[in-house]
Structure formats: C-alpha cells, structure tokens
Length: 368
Ligand code: NAD
Image (cartoon, rainbow, N blue to C red; front, side, top):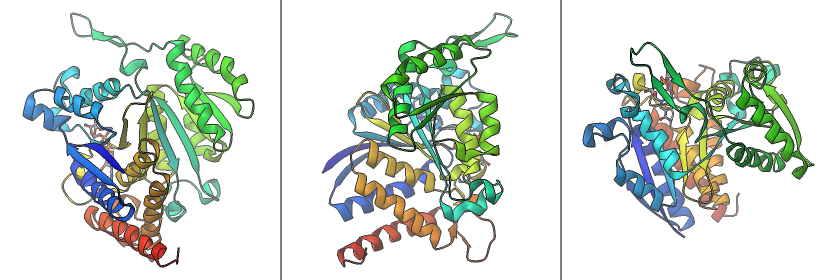
C-alpha cells in the first residue's frame, strides 16, 4: 500500500532519533511491500531560524494533507528567551491544534528486559507494567487565555474545558480500557478546580455506555504518588492536558527511561501525529547518545493507529524487544549489568533494523 508521511525532525536530538526511526520505516516498506512517500518539513527552532515562524504555513498544510506525521522534538536554549508565541514549543501546540488531534495516547509499557533500569523496587514491577495514559491535547491551560498585566509582574493561564472536549477524550479512554484490562481512572483535581468537577460529572454520566469498564477517579496529587507506590493498579488513565503531560513523564521513568516512551496523537479521522514523549535533550544533541527507541516505537504506533498496519507495528515492537534481548543499551537505559553493551544512537537504530530484517527472513523460512 502507498502512504504519504510528513516527518519533522525539529531541534536537538530530534534529527538524531528521527533518522533512525525512518531507517526502520524503510525496512518495513521493503519487507512488507509498502511505499512510504516521506517529505521532511520544518518546525520549532530550525523553522524560526529559517522563516521567523515556529510553524510555517507550508508545514501545517503538508501535515494536513499527509496520512500521518512523525515528529522528533522541538526547543532548545537558543530560543528560550523569545516571547511565548514565538518559541519553538508554540509551533508544536499550533500543529496539534491545527491537526485537531485532541487525544494523546501515551503507553507506559515496560519491556521486561529493562526492569533493572526502573528506579522502583523489583517487587513493585514484577510481572511487567502496562499503563496507558490518555491525555487531552488541544484544550486546558496550554490553550486557554493567557497573558500578563501591563506592569509585567502578574501572569495568568486559564484552565477551561467544555463538556464536549471532556466527553470526546474520556470516550477514547473508555474504548481503550475495553480492549485492555477494563479499568479507567479519570484523574483530576475536583476537590479544588471547577473544571475538575466537570471532568468528574461528565465521565460519570458516560459510564453507563461501558458497563464492562470499571470507572474510578483520583486526584492528580494522589495519582502522582500512586504511580510510584503501586503503578500496577492502573490500566488506563484519562486526564487533562497539563496533568497528562506531567504524569506521563513520571510514568516513563517508572518503566525505565523517557527515551523509551512513544506517543500517538489522534483526532476525528485526520492524520495522526506520532512522537516520542521526550524533548529535544540539548545536553546530548548530535553526540550519538540519544536513545532512538521511543521514536522507533512511535513509528509502530503510526503503523497501527493511522495506517491500519497492525502486523507491521507488532513486527517493529518485536524487533525492539530482540535488540534489548541482545543486551544493547543506550546510556539512559544502561545499568552496567553483565551482558549489556553500551551503544550509541546509530548502532541502536541499525540493530533494530537488522533484528527486523532477520525476523522477516525467519518468517520466510517458516522459522517464526
Ligand atoms: P528532555 O526530555 O529534552 O530531557 C530531559 C532529560 O532526559 C535530559 O537529561 C535528556 O538528556 C534526557 N533524554 C531525553 N530524551 C532522551 C533520549 N531519547 N535518550 C536519552 N536521554 C534522553 O526535557 P527538557 O530538558 O525539559 O527539555 C529540553 C527542551 O525540549 C526544551 O526546550 C523543552 O521545551 C523541549 N521539549 C520539547 C518537547 C517536544 O518537542 N515534544 C517535549 C518536552 C520538552
């Protein structure tokens, strides 16, 4: 099948990790006979430098016309002093809004090979960890009214949600839970925030449609604590934009490293946006140190959620597993245990591609 993909490497380690992920996509094309027409576009700091805009109109138009978008990361110290609307991150928010991708799926799944990389005691993660965070992505405080008073010594950002915005996000959470362990926890701050009370009220009113899913609620501060006290109690967490942003970084560390977690942003049928949850990591950019696996796993999510290629997605995830089984570790997931081998970004990407190709040859020979 033929697909058009826009890729936005962005800033910092973005180009390092996207290069490896595209290598894996090439291998998918060869092995499964698909054709991916990949076009590269600018966003973030590199776009500011080239055009003066964090999200050039050409980039947004290309993304809207594509089947899916694969993003690295944006931002860095060079652009930190620009006003909010001109920062690289403003480009990302505008892209999410422009594509109307209101639901961000962030699977925090621990590869069993990485249990030693988790900072949690083995007893807490024995038997694996698989939490799906469904984060609202185009509303709340990141998009609400914001500003400063004329003296510049007072600032505000507004948390505002409509019932419709909550409903469509919680629906994604219920549906996801139905295909998993059937538990949905809506995380809010309903004891303090009026918007939190609307989240709770809305989710409760929807529950009858999913009688097979157990619905619970938790305050965000408690959830932050429970994620390290007993993360296995969670199946699907649905929450607002800001709370989901913070909780998913926490969940990522519990699974081993932020360098492992992928995300899929989807909306009402348009192109999906796929990106690692980490940022541009300027401290290690261009040094062959970044872990490319979160971006490789984002390709798997892209194949699954936007392109309908489940078999191919599973094969990419399996190839990552084989690579970890072989002991290859980038610095962020290395523990120094016997059997591990420290590798850079390029070697990790090449190893996944090789595992992917070998797996295909094995399947042809009837061995897999
Ligand atoms: P970050 O995720 O970039 O880095 C946090 C820490 O994790 C750093 O020590 C970094 O080296 C490490 N790290 C991140 N990804 C890694 C990987 N793949 N492999 C190995 N180590 C990795 O977060 P930050 O430092 O808070 O932000 C840096 C810049 O990224 C800022 O400009 C921020 O605004 C931007 N940012 C962008 C996005 C995005 O594009 N989606 C998300 C978060 C932050």
